[in-house]
Amino acid sequence: MGGEASAAVASWLSTVPAPDATLPQMSDPSDLPCGWAPLHDTLYRAYHDTEWGVPERDPRALWEKFQLDGFQAGLSWITILRKRESMRAEFDGFVPEAVARWDDARIARALENPGIIRSRAKVQATIGNARAYLAMREAGLDFSAYLWDFVDGRPLDSRLATWRATPGKTALSETIAKDMKRRGFKFCGPTIVYACMQAVGMVNDHELRCPRHDAVLALA
Image (spheres, rainbow, N blue to C red):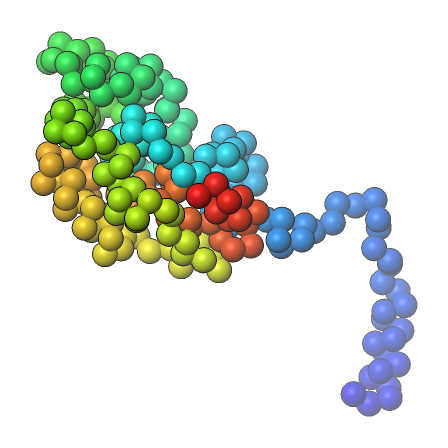
């Protein structure tokens, strides 16, 4: 850079005001959540900060999550999240023993509720999935032990630099989906299964920069 140019730059810099310490500053990148986590949607952000990726071992809670992700098929997760409490209320707390007893009249009543995803196919699949869950338990196979055995009981760590590198499905989710379908489950394709694996902590897909990555890793 020539002397005249340097002098011009120096002159311009002298006119730039010093940073105002009273203004909000940029966060350290290490304090930022995963790139997909909304900063201004409190419901969605709370889901990221307190639920997503936390290892879940309770069989009923795992079954519930698979049902909710099945309802998500073709929709966005925030749609399900906003309806989740209404869906829990309508689906008897997602207690498999209760849902397995639903008949046509109970289905019809549920489909009148605008607080749920009013898809007859998905509702019927949930009933069938409750019965499949109970059949596994009757055969001596705990749903939690069944799922966690696919990852040898410990979460897989994807060590993602960015959420955009997250796969839609994996060879493992395809294996799990195939086995679940063999056992009578529906709305459990490999993409749905992988989303569930992320949500229930079978795989840690928080970005490495995200504080939740190490937090959920410590819960393994």
